[in-house]
Length: 58
Image 1 (cartoon, rainbow, N blue to C red):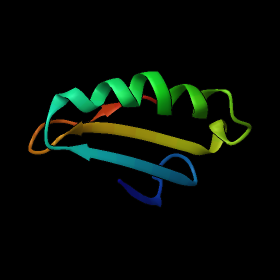
Image 2 (spheres, one colour):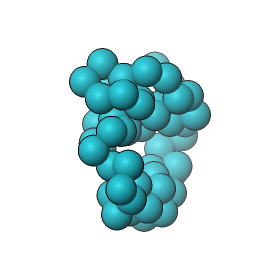
Image 3 (spheres, rainbow, N blue to C red):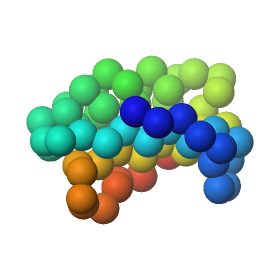
């Protein structure tokens, strides 16, 4: 996981995985917690597998 300054919003969180099985944790645990958080408007969230295109969640 990498946290850096975002391009469109102040915070960008990037989760890079070695296998696609990690998408379950992103979609069922991490994303819902951010989605109901008051910081949601300030976060860009990306997740993907190494050497593939990142998916944008927020």
